[in-house]
Image (cartoon, rainbow, N blue to C red; front, side):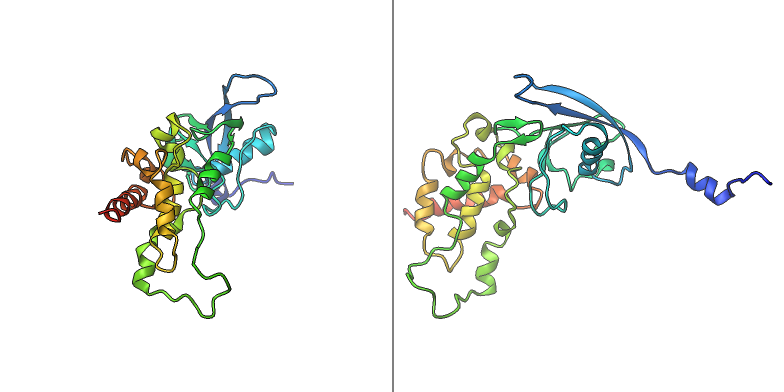
Amino acid sequence: MATPVLDKAEAEGRAASPYITVTFRIRRFNPEVSAEATWQDFQVEIDPKERVLDGLHKIKWDLDGTLTFRRSCAHGICGSDAMRINGKNRLACKTLIKDINPEKPITIEPIKGLTVLKDLVVDMEPFFQAYRDVMPFLITKETNEPTRERLQSPEDRERFDDTTKCILCAACTSSCPVFWNDGQYFGPAAIVNAHRFIFDSRDEAGEERLEILNDKDGVWRCRTTFNCTDACPRGIEVTKAIAEVKRALITRRL
């Protein structure tokens, strides 16, 4: 019987494997084991066109099942897998391996300014409390159900279109130096979601939200560093939205 051999096309296909070896350097923290965080390296065979989230899955499923991180939709909509990748806030599901220099170790750590619970998971409650405090829902003076649609022109809708894109990932808020130093600051995400209703022509509680953001921990704490705009995975002009809320506070008092 003849010895089986690979044909030329098959041999070339195997030789041109897309997989490369990538080092994931992950900041680990388990309060049940130690009060100190440590760094741990993992070597992963992965296609550079895959995402950082895919690499984390490979580590958790094949190398270390104790690795803890949040993720849900894996398509940049839920916002649950925000983390610091090579020193920048990003969504792991939208960050391709090839775009972050896989020839060097890829560092992954939790977002800053929020208490780390385990590994890459942080306590999001302060973030969501600030979101709730700005009343992120439509408020009208009607006490009963409306008798007709609350119509809005395309121009009125366009006024706040940008800030409707927020997915509450906390990438903007946890990139803010003011928030790092003082967790009482509302933060960019809360202000963005207040903006979305302050400038909605159908809403009637804009003044109340402005009063909330006029607090000492409100919009005036912003130092316009643009970190939040750079960090937003949805491309929201966060700093511009904050400036518009500041302007509304000033002009409504002239």
